[in-house]
Image 1 (cartoon, helix red, strand yellow):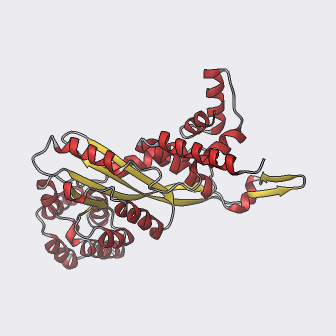
Image 2: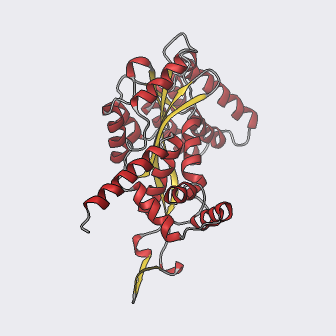
Image 3: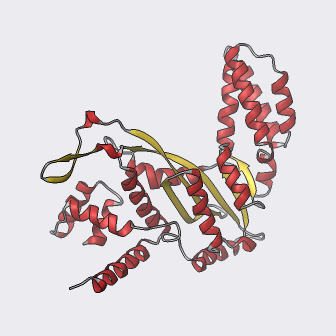
Length: 338
């Protein structure tokens, strides 16, 4: 019952999960059982708790390596996904009961970022997932989770070509340099295009053809590794208005800070991906589908429990996590006084 409750509520809202279980089995569980099952199952879970073993990861690497002449590419993608959260003050109190939900007007929701990462292999015509970890957490907490993965030896560095792909967030690259200094670093192509489009749209807003020509020429130069030439041209560009001045200034800083990550031609020749579709897909599948529902506002603790549970299912370790939970429960029962 607990396993079924946790598995169903990882996919659909608690009430829907209860209805489905009753319809399919003729049995039922309450919201209290479902919440208790998820809370107990996810208690104390870390990235290592929901990760495949090093042996399983090496097996997947070896399978992909059979299809390639060179070492397979292992991508580490890092990004964030917004989660609708409610404050702890939304937990009201009423005489005779421990807690009750406060009336909606008494609290204001806040969108918080669930920072996450995904390791996956790039095969000939597909990607092979290895592990994901998403939590509403700080930069340092995400870095610590990556450190745990590295220290546990889950990433076979000598058997893969490690590549990190992310947007221009400085905190990401700071931690990447510290943890994986030899990895190839790539600035997500589509984030870069967004910044270029902002300049093109304000600088050539009355000339669509000129806007398109500038975009195509600039992207071609970035593919050829001519980052400094693009920066020099931007600095010499005569801005049409104050907004163009600001967008040009921001693009110059963006490209300067990421000058070693935008040689897209080199990346393509090496077989590396230049887009962050892998982590965007993980954001949608792990976070958005379950947490971003109409009217849903999550306490951070509950959001992280659900994210951990969905990561376990995505990583193929749900059964392992539940078996560990059963062992903890049995041990606790044995140790408890009669």
